[in-house]
Amino acid sequence: MVFHVKHVPRETYGANLGKVIAVANQKGGVGKTTTAINLGASLAANDLRVLLIDCDPQGNATTGVGITKGTGKPTLYQVLLDEQDIEEAIIKTEFEGLDILPSDKNLVAINLELVDHDHRESTLREKIAPVRNRYQFIIIDCPPALDLLTLNAMVAADSILIPIQCEFFALEGVSQLLDTIERVRESFGSTIQMEGVLLTMYDERMNLTRQVEQDLREFFQQGVFRTVIPRSIRLAEAPSFGKPILSYDLRSRGAESYIQLAKEILAHEQSAGQATQSLG
Ligand SMILES: Nc1ncnc2c1ncn2[C@@H]1O[C@H](COP(=O)(O)OP(=O)(O)OP(=O)(O)O)[C@@H](O)[C@H]1O
Ligand SMILES: [Mg+2]
Figure 1 (cartoon, rainbow, N blue to C red):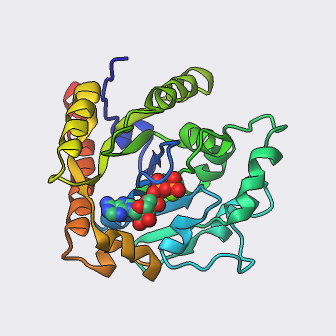
Figure 2 (cartoon, rainbow, N blue to C red; figure 1 turned 60 degrees about the horizontal axis):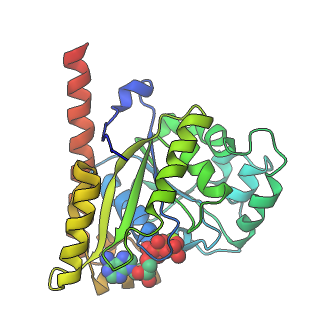
């Protein structure tokens, strides 16, 4: 499959509408949540308004930004079931500019509860619509499955960011993921684009890492971010303090790498915007 990386500028979606990025890979433990939290914080550190949506019943993005689960406050689950307005479920985090729509283990039932709904794949897209103009970016953290939750995230998203861990089976499951993206495009009126493939837990001292990187860059070509995320203890520690890496250890390589990733994404946005302007 050939990958065309086309960055659609936000103006295309209408003035001031937040760009929705789904962070997805059905493989577990590849750095989705770490990326969703820290990319979100890095964009917010650029004076942008960012909403992080925890679309995983594990609720790791929720605890990772310091929100306690199971307090009875409304979550994404109630929002998807139409029991709660999205505005009432969104919480400010301690990180300036970063809000979260939290989740907890109850969300797992949504896969069954939405099954009979007419718009079961586009429920999240509908729910996000009223708040899209309040944010410049909406980042969705997906669960490690190609389930109804991930489908909802993809249908809601303008682009998908795929974290891939530099290990031996890195490409395993990727074709299934790409097939799903294609299906979402064909079946749900989605124009989802590739935001990019992000190499995570990168260890430049390992031959294997460099080999896997070479394979991935060959396969995805320009679709791989130049920025790589190093393996870093500090990145792994930060969630247990309920903080993005920018608050936990701003000077760490992990923080630097996510700041760099945000810059790369913003630069893409800008050049896509200029390209459209010069066309128009
Ligand atoms: N760059 C990194 N360096 C070191 N540890 C990392 C890095 N990125 C993530 N981790 C750690 O690896 C584990 C998995 O990361 P994370 O939770 O972000 O993956 P995930 O894809 O969201 O997992 P799941 O599929 O379960 O949702 C976590 O313990 C996390 O702290
Ligand atoms: Mg996760």
